[in-house]
Amino acid sequence: MSPEPFAIPTQRLILRPWREADHAALFGLCSDPRVMEFLGPVQTEAEVYAGIARLRACQADNGYSFWAVERREDGIVLGFCGLKPGQPGTPIEGCIEIGWRLAADAWGKGYAREAAQASLDWGWANLDAPAIWAITAPGNVRSWGLMERLGMIRHADLDFVFPDLPPDSPLSQCITYSIARPA
Image (cartoon, rainbow, N blue to C red; front, top):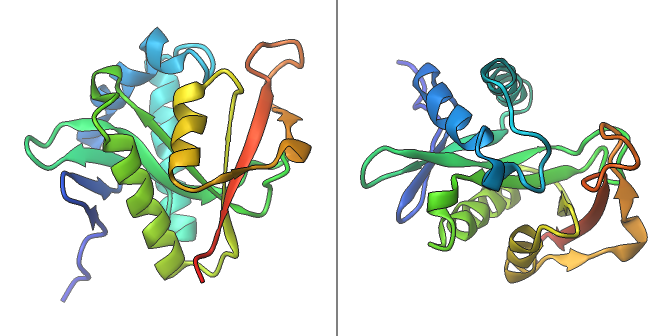
């Protein structure tokens, strides 16, 4: 008997591994300048395909990843949310990082919080991490606002310049948040 497919259901969403059919949805949001405003330049189709390959490899290697976020009501992929190992060369290297990216038309509806809380809950239940970390650009008010609504705490002493971006890029500055494992 084959194992059950991996999925994290919530009230309105399903967090799940990536499928071939998800490429168009992810390309749609990664090529939207509104979505990418604080994340870097819009991505090409090839960059999105490579990104999905990295996320699939992360899932295979670690048992977790930034998963596809599918709306249960209609099966639409709204973006991604989940956990991954912290970026090398940053203060969260070797830690567990939570992250999310949703299509602009999904903003303001509570989907990011619902997916992020489900990711945190899964992390606490399945990983032996003392904390889960997040990073974002200081101007990304929506993102760090969600971090704070989730109960994450900012670590100003861990602000840093993102290693994959030129130091003079307005997106290279990063702020760092974490949430400790619940008692």
